[in-house]
Amino acid sequence: FKFDRCFGQNSTQTDVFEEVKNFVQSALDGYNVSLLAYGQTGAGKTHTMIGGGGDHQGIIPRSIEQVEKRRTRRWEYTLHASCLEIYNESIRDLLCDPKDLEGKSYTIRQGENGLMSVTDLMSVLVCTREDIHKLMTTSEKHRTVKGTDMNERSSRSHTVFQVSIPSHIPFSRVLHGSLNLVDLAGSERLAKSNATAGDRLKETQSINKSLSALGDVFTSISQKKSHVPFRNSKLTFLLQPCFSGDGKALVIFALSPSETSTHESLCTLRFSSLISQCELG
Image 1 (cartoon, one colour):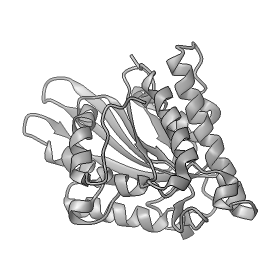
Image 2: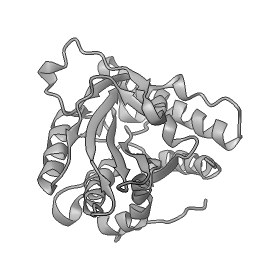
Image 3: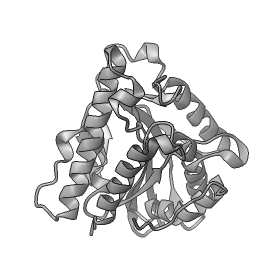
Image 4: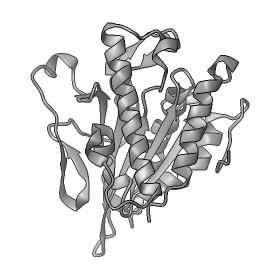
């Protein structure tokens, strides 16, 4: 297997972000950018994307901070952030109080400038480090996390942080970039996670189906097919602008160091080989 970069056990969160920060910059340059973390449950996706406090913070808070720091007198832009999860193929607003979600239905629509938007999704203006901290704290509190035999705090949904970055040079051009930072739900085998009944079974089946749909999209792109099945899942439909046209996508693969996870690790590596064959343009 070949990779653009590998991070070992002594790598830090800073090392990882240094590798992807120029990719984040592309959103400021007007591209639709998506950065995803993929791998089995418990392998470290959420730690990589969200992390902890101080030097342990992950790609999502570091990315938003980087975008905010790049503001200059010559280059003006606003930063609006939203956060959602896709749970059992339903969209939930993670910035909204759960008691206010009752009766709400969110729909993905193609808006202006070719970007996908979610109806009635809460969006907040980000200006300071405190705004970023509040955003992360609120979303983490509301996301769906349950225990399985493979991970006592397994993400049961795909979490998507969306940052809209309309920017312009005064008296010159206007750019409409977007940054989508995705913590995918963990791929897992039913027998190994013991999620074989009730809600856990339904969740796992939905997770594996949507990850399969993501694989179908990358397969179609790698084979340069005229039709790409973006609409087969809410996740791929939402990220369609990042997987086509002037979009840019980067996937970080998380692997468990456990020998008992060899099968899952091999599946992850094979999936990464598929993605490495994709050219978006």
